Image (cartoon, rainbow, N blue to C red):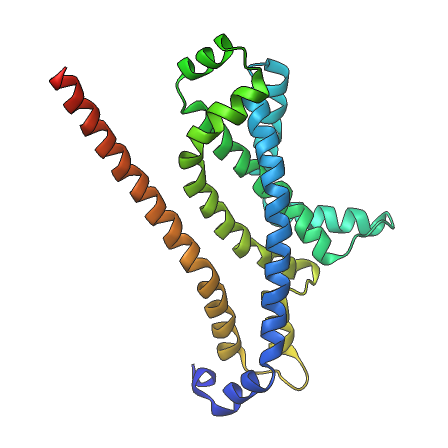
Length: 240
């Protein structure tokens, strides 16, 4: 623990502070593009899972089960080295975006599926009776109602995605964890292990904690609103 209180170590952190901000920037960029990909994949497979067509639902199920039941670290290594040995490398950051997008897309798909299935089947039947097709039903009726159920767990997936950018370290990435390791093992900066990893953890905390808190507050707010709506409905029924 002596290193944690070493003035020399903290001075190194201050001098090379831009290194940590560069790592944080790369982490943010990776997470942002991976999130966009995960949302597209999640919505696509979530809709397939609730399409009512068994082949499409089975395809979505296979994707979700395969991705969720293999480690993201393994997926990243496989994709990076498979492309590297085939002379089609797309770079470390792009590999991270693609891997994390595919991995968290499986979880997003489950979130979307759960949200859609939480809506009463009567809503689907009413939409069909009004002439809405599947896409129209989803866009105009089902998704607007399920969004309050989807968003809180989706924010939690965003937090997990940001933390999982640390897996880029295994393929020599330029994310926050990777640059921290390079810093503590560098010829001119080596040795400041405790302060460097503390700062790295603090930066992750600053980004992830507000998002986690937002998801919790959001979920609690929705639960309270549902309770109030239930009480109001019961009151109206008694008055009737």
